[in-house]
Amino acid sequence: MRKSLIFAHRGANREAAENTRSAFDKALCHAIDGMETDVQLSRDEVAVLWHDRFLDKAGFPDKHVDDFDYAQLQAMNFAAHFSSGAEPEGIMSLKEFLDAYRKRCRLLLEIKNREWEYSFRHEIKVRETLEMAGAMHGGAIMVSSFNLASLVYAHRCAPQFPLVYNLEPEQTLDDARRALIEQPFLHGLCLPIASLDDAMVRLLRAHGKCIAVYTCNSDEEISKALGLGVDILISDVPQKALMMRDKYNASYSTVRGEPVEPPATHPEPFDNLRANGNIP
Image (tube, rainbow, N blue to C red):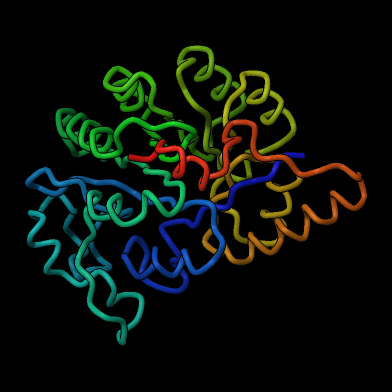
């Protein structure tokens, strides 16, 4: 059996406001393997961390991130929606995030593309993300997107960079098969947990691809992901996922008498990647 890596979804977003330094710091209080975050572009072309289409959580329900320059976004309070008593936090830039966390755990950077954006801004976002991440080995940093065209462009920019295609809930096994055949450069797929089944696992394993799943929060969802041996399990409750993984792995080793191995697509422990100089 392969050990699943546990990634905190937008940091520890049930302990602090998502995609803030507080959420990421709190996530690292648990023995997580990685963190997932979302990349958008400010009006003045700074890559920043924000998931939603609108800024209602920051008090601007009819505005987008790209309606404001980076300095204006920094001056907003992105923590107030979580708790009135939380310390104010402006938006975090991708550069700040990478500087703070790239040597502490694996990172999954989801590039958000919006339908109102010009295509050249999509490309700027991709280039900035890849340039800041730098050359990667062992999947220490991966880039994902629901927009396959953006990943194709990313592959042209950085052919060796691990790129993950996020599937929407309505996409099927045939959609996954088509993507893997037409875009063999893909490092893997990130699936909604409801779409994960034996057939999907067999397809991805046959192609030698990484299997990531989102967003596993209930006992049933976490158990399903662990039982099917996913490589990356993304959760809003990483501490629970870690406890369930450790219990599951211990039970498996006891019953089967076999060791739990690292994920096939990420076999080298993160500490080894750091020690070997594979993380810039």
